[in-house]
Amino acid sequence: METYERPASHSSNSEIASGNQQQGHPIEEWDEPYIECRDLFKIFKRAELEVVALRGIDMEVEQGEMVAIVGASGSGKSTLLNILSGLDRPSAGQVRVGHRDLLNISDQELVLYRRLEVGFVWQATARNLVPYLSARDNIELPQAIAGKDMSSRRARSLELLSILDMEDKADRKIHQLSGGEQQRLAIAVGMANSPPLLLADEPTGELDTQMASQVFQLLREINRIYHVTIVVVTHYQGVVEHMDRVLHIRDGRISSESRLEPGQHGTENALHEEYLVVDRVGRLQLPQEYVDKLHIQGFAKADIAGDQVNIKPASRSPKPGQGQRSDTAESA
Ligand SMILES: Nc1ncnc2c1ncn2[C@@H]1O[C@H](COP(=O)(O)OP(=O)(O)OP(=O)(O)O)[C@@H](O)[C@H]1O
Ligand SMILES: [Mg+2]
Image 1: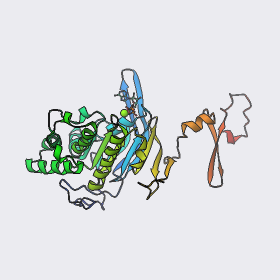
Image 2 (image 1 turned 135 degrees about the vertical axis):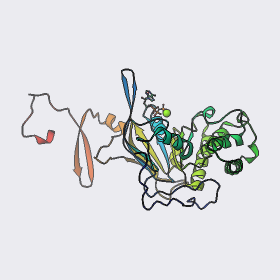
Image 3 (image 1 turned 180 degrees about the horizontal axis):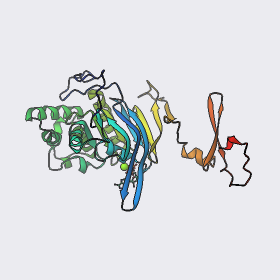
Image 4 (image 1 turned 135 degrees about the horizontal axis):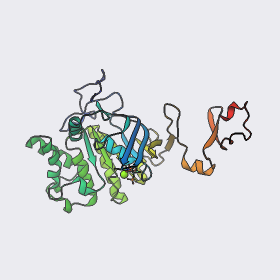
């Protein structure tokens, strides 16, 4: 099966949610999460070696949400993004984006998905932009590949260049733009075919803090105007200020999420809260610093105290024949 049933409440002919009359296709509206991953696994096999890069990702992203994924090197961030972008296939679990089931999708559908339903921005500008084309032609190239006619290509590139505030730089070649301008242009290229989903893997990795902040501001602007869902992998420190949510990935699983409390965006006293993710069967990951501080090794005891759960370090179960009492069901 390649597609999901369209929900009854799902209008196929909706306006761009912000009400802004921009060019390009209106984005279909979804009442259910736009991205849904359930127990998602990715295993890389090379010769005898297996690497489990994703080990049970549970994640939902609403349509029009702007979400960052952060985590240590090797935790699985790019692997997850590559699956969401259709560049790589998952090994097991479920992953749905819009009406596409990315686990069971055919190669043909995957090509269409990548071309029309997802925009992608890489860390290295060389991967995002064609150096011998102008800024305008870079935005028009993906549209030409998608078969758009000349006038709609031109209208779309002008519209995006005006959002970037770079109309006066339309004819410049890539090397005549600053690093920040190149990454902002890369976002416009990603949005060229009006995809409902924009993904970015460390788009500010090669930029200084000020330029990085401008890139995140542009992402927010694009998100507001087009109601596009955005998922961005980043190491940028101040990212939570710009996002609806920040998901922390650890060892191939989402361990916690942070967000600014409602109404706090842009204020000086913004309250930044971090929550542990507890999955449907009650699994959670304790922060590594707690595990280290309490010297938890293999076992812990959990007790309910009022409306709280207390977790205490516990020793490993004794070896067979060493003090195991048959009436201690508690030690199980
Ligand atoms: N093509 C591949 N073949 C084998 N192993 C891979 C492949 N791609 C990624 N891995 C492994 O999967 C794990 C997750 O890698 P991934 O690139 O998703 O990490 P990351 O969180 O993006 O790290 P970074 O912050 O360094 O970019 C790592 O152990 C990595 O070595
Ligand atoms: Mg990566």
